[in-house]
Length: 424
Ligand SMILES: Nc1nc2c(ncn2[C@@H]2O[C@H](COP(=O)(O)OP(=O)(O)OP(=O)(O)O)[C@@H](O)[C@H]2O)c(=O)[nH]1
Ligand SMILES: [Mg+2]
Image (spheres, protein in one colour):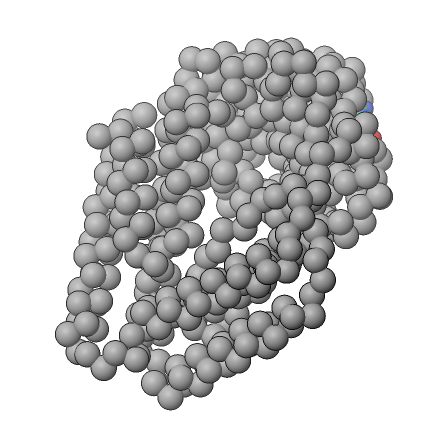
Protein backbone atom coordinates (compact mmCIF):
# COMPACT_ATOMS: atom_id res chain seq x y z
CA UNK A 1 0.00 0.00 0.00
CA UNK A 2 1.40 3.39 -0.90
CA UNK A 3 0.21 6.96 -0.38
CA UNK A 4 -1.43 7.16 -3.79
CA UNK A 5 -3.53 4.08 -3.09
CA UNK A 6 -4.39 5.38 0.36
CA UNK A 7 -5.42 8.72 -1.14
CA UNK A 8 -7.69 7.01 -3.65
CA UNK A 9 -9.18 4.92 -0.88
CA UNK A 10 -9.88 8.02 1.21
CA UNK A 11 -11.45 9.71 -1.78
CA UNK A 12 -13.76 6.75 -2.38
CA UNK A 13 -14.70 6.71 1.27
CA UNK A 14 -15.60 10.41 1.26
CA UNK A 15 -17.42 10.02 -2.05
CA UNK A 16 -20.04 7.86 -0.34
CA UNK A 17 -21.14 10.65 1.99
CA UNK A 18 -22.78 13.89 0.91
CA UNK A 19 -21.43 15.46 4.10
CA UNK A 20 -17.87 14.87 2.91
CA UNK A 21 -17.95 16.65 -0.44
CA UNK A 22 -15.27 19.11 0.59
CA UNK A 23 -13.03 16.28 1.76
CA UNK A 24 -13.64 14.39 -1.45
CA UNK A 25 -12.58 17.45 -3.43
CA UNK A 26 -9.50 17.96 -1.24
CA UNK A 27 -8.41 14.34 -1.63
CA UNK A 28 -9.05 14.54 -5.36
CA UNK A 29 -6.58 17.45 -5.49
CA UNK A 30 -4.05 15.46 -3.49
CA UNK A 31 -4.42 12.54 -5.88
CA UNK A 32 -3.90 14.91 -8.80
CA UNK A 33 -0.75 16.25 -7.15
CA UNK A 34 0.66 12.76 -6.73
CA UNK A 35 -0.19 11.83 -10.30
CA UNK A 36 1.15 15.04 -11.89
CA UNK A 37 4.29 14.88 -9.76
CA UNK A 38 4.37 18.67 -9.59
CA UNK A 39 6.28 19.95 -6.57
CA UNK A 40 5.22 23.21 -4.95
CA UNK A 41 7.69 25.37 -3.05
CA UNK A 42 6.27 28.39 -1.23
CA UNK A 43 8.43 31.30 -0.12
CA UNK A 44 7.07 32.38 3.23
CA UNK A 45 8.17 34.78 5.94
CA UNK A 46 7.37 38.02 7.66
CA UNK A 47 6.84 41.09 5.53
CA UNK A 48 9.89 42.83 4.11
CA UNK A 49 12.25 39.90 4.55
CA UNK A 50 12.92 39.98 0.81
CA UNK A 51 10.77 37.05 -0.39
CA UNK A 52 9.78 38.63 -3.67
CA UNK A 53 13.31 39.94 -4.30
CA UNK A 54 14.60 36.37 -3.90
CA UNK A 55 12.03 35.04 -6.36
CA UNK A 56 12.93 37.71 -8.93
CA UNK A 57 16.61 36.79 -8.55
CA UNK A 58 15.82 33.09 -9.00
CA UNK A 59 13.73 33.86 -12.09
CA UNK A 60 16.54 36.02 -13.46
CA UNK A 61 14.43 39.16 -13.98
CA UNK A 62 12.29 41.55 -11.94
CA UNK A 63 8.88 40.09 -12.79
CA UNK A 64 7.22 40.76 -9.44
CA UNK A 65 6.93 44.07 -7.53
CA UNK A 66 9.15 44.64 -4.46
CA UNK A 67 9.52 47.58 -2.11
CA UNK A 68 10.32 49.19 1.18
CA UNK A 69 6.70 49.10 2.42
CA UNK A 70 4.53 45.94 2.57
CA UNK A 71 3.99 45.04 -1.04
CA UNK A 72 2.78 41.57 -1.85
CA UNK A 73 -1.00 41.51 -1.41
CA UNK A 74 -1.85 38.35 -3.38
CA UNK A 75 -0.43 34.91 -3.90
CA UNK A 76 1.46 34.31 -7.13
CA UNK A 77 2.17 30.82 -8.47
CA UNK A 78 4.99 30.68 -10.94
CA UNK A 79 5.32 27.74 -13.29
CA UNK A 80 7.50 26.74 -16.18
CA UNK A 81 6.46 27.19 -19.77
CA UNK A 82 8.74 27.23 -22.75
CA UNK A 83 8.56 30.43 -24.79
CA UNK A 84 5.63 31.58 -22.70
CA UNK A 85 6.66 35.21 -23.01
CA UNK A 86 5.86 35.66 -19.30
CA UNK A 87 2.17 34.99 -19.61
CA UNK A 88 -0.01 35.74 -16.55
CA UNK A 89 -3.57 34.93 -15.48
CA UNK A 90 -5.35 36.58 -12.57
CA UNK A 91 -7.94 34.40 -10.78
CA UNK A 92 -10.55 36.28 -8.78
CA UNK A 93 -12.28 34.88 -5.70
CA UNK A 94 -15.64 34.88 -7.50
CA UNK A 95 -14.29 32.36 -9.99
CA UNK A 96 -13.59 34.69 -12.89
CA UNK A 97 -10.17 34.93 -14.46
CA UNK A 98 -8.41 37.32 -16.77
CA UNK A 99 -5.27 37.14 -18.88
CA UNK A 100 -2.91 39.99 -17.99
CA UNK A 101 0.46 41.00 -19.51
CA UNK A 102 3.19 40.22 -16.98
CA UNK A 103 4.33 43.85 -16.90
CA UNK A 104 0.87 44.89 -15.63
CA UNK A 105 0.76 42.37 -12.79
CA UNK A 106 1.69 44.95 -10.16
CA UNK A 107 -1.82 46.40 -10.51
CA UNK A 108 -3.20 43.15 -9.01
CA UNK A 109 -0.37 42.01 -6.74
CA UNK A 110 0.90 45.13 -5.05
CA UNK A 111 -0.77 46.48 -1.95
CA UNK A 112 -0.36 50.06 -3.16
CA UNK A 113 -2.36 49.48 -6.32
CA UNK A 114 -4.71 46.82 -5.02
CA UNK A 115 -5.33 48.17 -1.55
CA UNK A 116 -6.77 45.59 0.87
CA UNK A 117 -7.24 43.44 -2.22
CA UNK A 118 -10.26 45.46 -3.31
CA UNK A 119 -10.00 43.77 -6.70
CA UNK A 120 -10.79 40.44 -5.06
CA UNK A 121 -7.77 38.54 -6.37
CA UNK A 122 -7.65 34.93 -5.23
CA UNK A 123 -4.35 34.12 -6.88
CA UNK A 124 -2.15 34.91 -9.82
CA UNK A 125 -0.54 32.38 -12.13
CA UNK A 126 2.60 33.36 -13.97
CA UNK A 127 4.20 31.25 -16.68
CA UNK A 128 7.83 31.88 -17.48
CA UNK A 129 10.80 29.97 -18.83
CA UNK A 130 13.21 30.16 -15.86
CA UNK A 131 15.49 27.09 -15.61
CA UNK A 132 14.77 26.64 -11.92
CA UNK A 133 11.14 25.76 -12.68
CA UNK A 134 11.95 22.98 -15.13
CA UNK A 135 10.92 19.44 -14.20
CA UNK A 136 7.58 20.45 -12.73
CA UNK A 137 8.55 22.83 -9.97
CA UNK A 138 6.09 25.54 -8.92
CA UNK A 139 7.37 28.52 -6.95
CA UNK A 140 4.89 30.54 -4.91
CA UNK A 141 5.25 34.11 -3.64
CA UNK A 142 3.09 34.89 -0.61
CA UNK A 143 2.10 38.02 1.34
CA UNK A 144 4.13 38.60 4.52
CA UNK A 145 3.14 36.61 7.61
CA UNK A 146 1.65 38.93 10.20
CA UNK A 147 1.30 41.86 7.84
CA UNK A 148 -2.00 43.71 7.90
CA UNK A 149 -2.57 42.41 4.38
CA UNK A 150 -2.06 38.75 5.12
CA UNK A 151 -5.76 38.07 5.50
CA UNK A 152 -6.48 39.23 2.00
CA UNK A 153 -6.05 35.77 0.65
CA UNK A 154 -5.46 32.29 1.92
CA UNK A 155 -3.22 32.56 4.98
CA UNK A 156 0.47 31.70 4.93
CA UNK A 157 -0.28 28.85 7.35
CA UNK A 158 -2.72 27.28 4.87
CA UNK A 159 -0.20 27.77 2.14
CA UNK A 160 2.63 26.13 4.04
CA UNK A 161 0.32 23.18 4.64
CA UNK A 162 -0.45 22.83 0.97
CA UNK A 163 3.15 23.05 -0.19
CA UNK A 164 5.65 20.25 -0.52
CA UNK A 165 8.46 22.53 0.50
CA UNK A 166 8.74 25.87 2.27
CA UNK A 167 11.53 28.40 1.88
CA UNK A 168 11.24 30.19 5.19
CA UNK A 169 12.83 33.63 4.97
CA UNK A 170 14.58 35.42 7.76
CA UNK A 171 16.76 38.45 7.42
CA UNK A 172 19.76 39.66 9.37
CA UNK A 173 18.19 43.02 10.15
CA UNK A 174 15.91 41.43 12.72
CA UNK A 175 16.19 38.30 14.88
CA UNK A 176 13.38 35.73 14.80
CA UNK A 177 10.36 37.28 16.49
CA UNK A 178 7.20 35.94 18.09
CA UNK A 179 5.13 36.07 14.91
CA UNK A 180 7.67 33.86 13.16
CA UNK A 181 7.93 31.51 16.12
CA UNK A 182 4.13 31.12 16.26
CA UNK A 183 3.99 30.51 12.54
CA UNK A 184 6.65 27.79 12.61
CA UNK A 185 4.95 26.07 15.55
CA UNK A 186 1.67 25.98 13.65
CA UNK A 187 3.05 24.53 10.45
CA UNK A 188 5.89 22.30 11.59
CA UNK A 189 3.95 19.04 11.44
CA UNK A 190 2.31 19.77 8.11
CA UNK A 191 4.84 21.13 5.65
CA UNK A 192 6.95 18.69 3.68
CA UNK A 193 10.43 20.14 3.74
CA UNK A 194 11.81 23.37 5.18
CA UNK A 195 14.64 25.53 3.86
CA UNK A 196 15.68 28.25 6.28
CA UNK A 197 17.12 31.16 4.37
CA UNK A 198 18.80 34.17 5.98
CA UNK A 199 18.61 37.18 3.69
CA UNK A 200 20.32 40.59 3.40
CA UNK A 201 23.74 39.32 4.40
CA UNK A 202 25.20 42.24 2.42
CA UNK A 203 24.30 44.36 5.45
CA UNK A 204 26.56 42.63 7.99
CA UNK A 205 30.17 41.48 8.25
CA UNK A 206 31.23 37.84 8.60
CA UNK A 207 31.44 37.89 12.35
CA UNK A 208 28.00 39.35 12.80
CA UNK A 209 26.59 36.85 10.33
CA UNK A 210 28.14 33.90 12.21
CA UNK A 211 26.61 35.17 15.42
CA UNK A 212 23.21 35.57 13.82
CA UNK A 213 23.33 32.08 12.28
CA UNK A 214 24.30 30.46 15.62
CA UNK A 215 21.53 32.24 17.43
CA UNK A 216 18.87 31.36 14.87
CA UNK A 217 19.95 27.71 14.46
CA UNK A 218 19.63 27.09 18.18
CA UNK A 219 16.25 28.78 18.29
CA UNK A 220 14.91 26.94 15.23
CA UNK A 221 16.01 23.58 16.67
CA UNK A 222 13.99 24.35 19.77
CA UNK A 223 10.91 25.50 17.86
CA UNK A 224 10.98 22.58 15.41
CA UNK A 225 11.90 19.98 18.08
CA UNK A 226 15.11 19.00 16.30
CA UNK A 227 17.61 17.00 18.32
CA UNK A 228 20.81 15.03 17.75
CA UNK A 229 21.51 14.27 14.09
CA UNK A 230 18.49 16.20 12.92
CA UNK A 231 19.71 19.29 14.73
CA UNK A 232 23.18 18.84 13.23
CA UNK A 233 21.70 18.49 9.76
CA UNK A 234 19.85 21.82 10.06
CA UNK A 235 21.60 24.20 7.72
CA UNK A 236 20.63 27.83 7.44
CA UNK A 237 21.33 29.25 4.00
CA UNK A 238 22.75 32.78 4.01
CA UNK A 239 21.92 34.84 0.92
CA UNK A 240 21.71 38.32 -0.44
CA UNK A 241 18.63 38.22 -2.61
CA UNK A 242 19.46 41.67 -3.93
CA UNK A 243 23.08 40.98 -4.88
CA UNK A 244 22.55 37.32 -5.70
CA UNK A 245 25.12 35.99 -3.20
CA UNK A 246 24.26 32.43 -2.10
CA UNK A 247 21.18 32.21 -4.31
CA UNK A 248 22.73 29.65 -6.64
CA UNK A 249 23.72 27.45 -3.68
CA UNK A 250 20.13 27.62 -2.49
CA UNK A 251 18.57 26.78 -5.85
CA UNK A 252 21.01 23.92 -6.39
CA UNK A 253 20.24 22.57 -2.96
CA UNK A 254 16.50 22.68 -3.62
CA UNK A 255 16.75 21.16 -7.09
CA UNK A 256 19.13 18.40 -5.98
CA UNK A 257 16.80 17.56 -3.11
CA UNK A 258 13.81 17.49 -5.40
CA UNK A 259 15.38 15.42 -8.11
CA UNK A 260 16.64 12.85 -5.63
CA UNK A 261 13.98 12.93 -2.98
CA UNK A 262 11.08 14.63 -4.76
CA UNK A 263 8.64 11.72 -4.68
CA UNK A 264 9.51 11.00 -1.06
CA UNK A 265 9.03 14.63 -0.02
CA UNK A 266 5.72 14.75 -1.84
CA UNK A 267 4.42 11.49 -0.40
CA UNK A 268 5.23 12.66 3.06
CA UNK A 269 3.56 16.02 2.56
CA UNK A 270 0.46 14.44 1.00
CA UNK A 271 0.32 11.91 3.84
CA UNK A 272 0.42 14.69 6.42
CA UNK A 273 -2.32 16.55 4.60
CA UNK A 274 -4.49 13.44 4.43
CA UNK A 275 -4.13 12.98 8.17
CA UNK A 276 -5.23 16.54 8.68
CA UNK A 277 -8.28 16.06 6.44
CA UNK A 278 -9.23 12.87 8.30
CA UNK A 279 -8.98 14.70 11.63
CA UNK A 280 -11.16 17.53 10.39
CA UNK A 281 -13.75 15.08 9.13
CA UNK A 282 -13.88 13.35 12.47
CA UNK A 283 -14.64 16.61 14.25
CA UNK A 284 -17.16 17.53 11.57
CA UNK A 285 -19.01 14.27 12.04
CA UNK A 286 -18.96 14.82 15.77
CA UNK A 287 -20.70 18.16 15.29
CA UNK A 288 -23.10 16.59 12.79
CA UNK A 289 -24.12 14.10 15.46
CA UNK A 290 -24.89 17.05 17.69
CA UNK A 291 -27.11 18.58 15.01
CA UNK A 292 -28.93 15.27 14.63
CA UNK A 293 -30.13 15.85 18.16
CA UNK A 294 -31.59 19.23 17.21
CA UNK A 295 -35.25 19.47 18.24
CA UNK A 296 -37.54 18.96 15.20
CA UNK A 297 -39.29 22.29 15.66
CA UNK A 298 -35.97 24.16 15.74
CA UNK A 299 -34.84 22.27 12.67
CA UNK A 300 -38.07 22.96 10.81
CA UNK A 301 -37.87 26.65 11.61
CA UNK A 302 -34.34 26.86 10.25
CA UNK A 303 -35.25 24.79 7.24
CA UNK A 304 -38.11 27.17 6.48
CA UNK A 305 -35.74 30.13 6.86
CA UNK A 306 -33.44 28.55 4.32
CA UNK A 307 -36.28 27.90 1.87
CA UNK A 308 -37.52 31.45 2.18
CA UNK A 309 -34.06 32.78 1.46
CA UNK A 310 -33.89 30.70 -1.68
CA UNK A 311 -37.30 31.90 -2.77
CA UNK A 312 -36.24 35.54 -2.43
CA UNK A 313 -33.17 34.85 -4.53
CA UNK A 314 -35.26 33.14 -7.21
CA UNK A 315 -37.46 36.25 -7.41
CA UNK A 316 -34.45 38.46 -7.93
CA UNK A 317 -33.28 36.47 -10.92
CA UNK A 318 -36.11 37.94 -12.96
CA UNK A 319 -34.64 41.42 -12.59
CA UNK A 320 -31.18 40.53 -13.78
CA UNK A 321 -29.88 41.58 -17.14
CA UNK A 322 -27.72 39.48 -19.41
CA UNK A 323 -24.28 40.29 -18.15
CA UNK A 324 -20.92 38.64 -18.19
CA UNK A 325 -20.83 38.62 -14.41
CA UNK A 326 -23.67 36.16 -13.95
CA UNK A 327 -21.16 33.34 -13.55
CA UNK A 328 -19.47 35.30 -10.77
CA UNK A 329 -22.82 35.94 -9.14
CA UNK A 330 -23.64 32.25 -9.19
CA UNK A 331 -20.33 31.53 -7.46
CA UNK A 332 -21.01 34.20 -4.87
CA UNK A 333 -24.44 32.70 -4.27
CA UNK A 334 -22.82 29.32 -3.65
CA UNK A 335 -20.37 30.87 -1.18
CA UNK A 336 -23.31 32.53 0.56
CA UNK A 337 -25.25 29.25 0.79
CA UNK A 338 -22.20 27.48 2.24
CA UNK A 339 -22.00 30.12 4.99
CA UNK A 340 -25.74 29.95 5.60
CA UNK A 341 -25.81 26.16 5.96
CA UNK A 342 -22.93 26.38 8.42
CA UNK A 343 -24.76 29.07 10.40
CA UNK A 344 -28.16 27.37 10.44
CA UNK A 345 -27.23 23.71 10.72
CA UNK A 346 -23.62 23.73 11.90
CA UNK A 347 -22.35 21.60 9.04
CA UNK A 348 -19.94 22.23 6.20
CA UNK A 349 -21.70 22.06 2.86
CA UNK A 350 -19.30 22.52 0.00
CA UNK A 351 -19.77 23.85 -3.51
CA UNK A 352 -17.44 23.74 -6.45
CA UNK A 353 -16.70 27.27 -7.54
CA UNK A 354 -16.44 27.30 -11.31
CA UNK A 355 -13.47 29.08 -12.75
CA UNK A 356 -14.25 30.88 -15.93
CA UNK A 357 -12.80 33.45 -18.22
CA UNK A 358 -14.09 36.94 -17.39
CA UNK A 359 -14.86 37.54 -21.03
CA UNK A 360 -17.32 34.63 -21.17
CA UNK A 361 -20.98 35.61 -21.19
CA UNK A 362 -23.76 33.85 -19.34
CA UNK A 363 -27.35 34.56 -20.23
CA UNK A 364 -30.16 34.97 -17.75
CA UNK A 365 -31.99 31.72 -18.61
CA UNK A 366 -28.87 29.63 -18.06
CA UNK A 367 -28.22 31.46 -14.80
CA UNK A 368 -31.78 30.90 -13.57
CA UNK A 369 -31.61 27.21 -14.49
CA UNK A 370 -28.27 26.71 -12.74
CA UNK A 371 -29.42 28.59 -9.68
CA UNK A 372 -32.60 26.51 -9.46
CA UNK A 373 -30.54 23.34 -9.73
CA UNK A 374 -28.29 24.54 -6.90
CA UNK A 375 -31.29 25.29 -4.65
CA UNK A 376 -33.12 22.05 -5.41
CA UNK A 377 -30.04 20.02 -4.71
CA UNK A 378 -29.37 21.80 -1.46
CA UNK A 379 -32.95 21.31 -0.31
CA UNK A 380 -32.80 17.60 -1.06
CA UNK A 381 -29.46 17.19 0.59
CA UNK A 382 -30.40 19.03 3.76
CA UNK A 383 -33.51 16.88 3.86
CA UNK A 384 -31.66 13.64 3.45
CA UNK A 385 -28.83 14.63 5.78
CA UNK A 386 -31.23 15.27 8.58
CA UNK A 387 -34.02 12.85 7.68
CA UNK A 388 -36.52 14.71 9.78
CA UNK A 389 -39.09 14.30 7.11
CA UNK A 390 -38.73 10.57 7.30
CA UNK A 391 -40.14 9.33 10.54
CA UNK A 392 -38.59 5.98 9.93
CA UNK A 393 -36.55 4.70 12.85
CA UNK A 394 -34.92 2.07 10.68
CA UNK A 395 -33.49 4.68 8.24
CA UNK A 396 -32.19 6.75 11.12
CA UNK A 397 -30.53 3.73 12.69
CA UNK A 398 -28.96 2.84 9.35
CA UNK A 399 -27.64 6.36 9.08
CA UNK A 400 -25.99 6.23 12.50
CA UNK A 401 -24.55 2.85 11.63
CA UNK A 402 -23.09 4.25 8.37
CA UNK A 403 -21.48 7.07 10.30
CA UNK A 404 -19.94 4.61 12.73
CA UNK A 405 -18.50 2.62 9.85
CA UNK A 406 -17.13 5.80 8.28
CA UNK A 407 -15.47 6.74 11.57
CA UNK A 408 -13.97 3.26 11.88
CA UNK A 409 -12.61 3.28 8.35
CA UNK A 410 -11.15 6.73 8.85
CA UNK A 411 -9.34 5.58 11.96
CA UNK A 412 -7.93 2.66 10.02
CA UNK A 413 -6.75 4.92 7.22
CA UNK A 414 -5.12 7.33 9.68
CA UNK A 415 -3.15 4.48 11.24
CA UNK A 416 -2.07 3.28 7.83
CA UNK A 417 -0.87 6.74 6.80
CA UNK A 418 1.02 7.20 10.05
CA UNK A 419 2.87 3.96 9.34
CA UNK A 420 3.62 4.99 5.77
CA UNK A 421 4.97 8.37 6.79
CA UNK A 422 7.28 6.76 9.29
CA UNK A 423 8.82 4.57 6.64
CA UNK A 424 9.43 7.41 4.15
N1 LIG B 1 20.16 45.14 1.57
C1 LIG B 1 19.31 44.26 1.05
N2 LIG B 1 18.02 44.60 0.88
C2 LIG B 1 17.18 43.67 0.37
C3 LIG B 1 17.61 42.38 0.02
N3 LIG B 1 16.55 41.67 -0.43
C4 LIG B 1 15.50 42.52 -0.39
N4 LIG B 1 15.89 43.73 0.08
C5 LIG B 1 15.03 44.91 0.25
O1 LIG B 1 14.06 44.66 1.23
C6 LIG B 1 12.84 45.30 0.89
C7 LIG B 1 11.71 44.28 0.87
O2 LIG B 1 11.86 43.39 -0.22
P1 LIG B 1 10.64 42.54 -0.80
O3 LIG B 1 11.25 41.56 -1.73
O4 LIG B 1 9.56 43.42 -1.29
O5 LIG B 1 10.20 41.84 0.54
P2 LIG B 1 8.95 40.84 0.76
O6 LIG B 1 9.37 39.89 1.81
O7 LIG B 1 8.52 40.30 -0.52
O8 LIG B 1 7.88 41.85 1.36
P3 LIG B 1 6.25 41.68 1.40
O9 LIG B 1 5.82 41.25 0.05
O10 LIG B 1 5.74 43.02 1.76
O11 LIG B 1 5.97 40.66 2.46
C8 LIG B 1 13.05 45.96 -0.45
O12 LIG B 1 13.33 47.32 -0.23
C9 LIG B 1 14.24 45.22 -1.00
O13 LIG B 1 15.00 45.99 -1.89
C10 LIG B 1 18.98 42.05 0.22
O14 LIG B 1 19.46 40.96 -0.05
N5 LIG B 1 19.78 43.02 0.74
MG1 LIG C 1 6.71 40.37 -1.49
